[in-house]
Image (cartoon, rainbow, N blue to C red):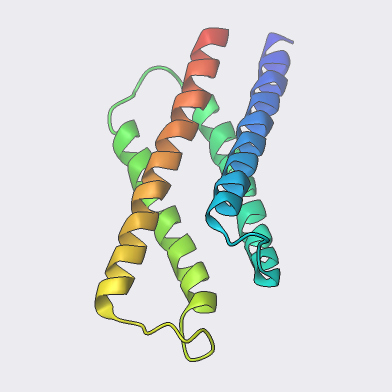
Length: 140
């Protein structure tokens, strides 16, 4: 019975973490967009929603990790964040570069873009892990 209650609380917390992630990133993206945002801004919404689902799944997994055996956990979280950031970089670069956008694609601009997104992915993963593990350890 206690395990079921703990699992429900963990799922609820994971939903809040995912919702906070989505709202925070939408506000940050809106702050950086032109005002009013262009019509193409709507294309970002499915990417943010997909990221929210991934954050929910990872937050559930992080909160389920037992307190013991923490060796390598931080490295795994960082690696997941880096990979996630690179995947977002690939998704966004498919739609934002090329002849239609008029933006020249250089190796330097690609390195900067992917480095920034990989770093933000790692930072997001650390924040999700911290929120999930602190909440899970406080419950135990």
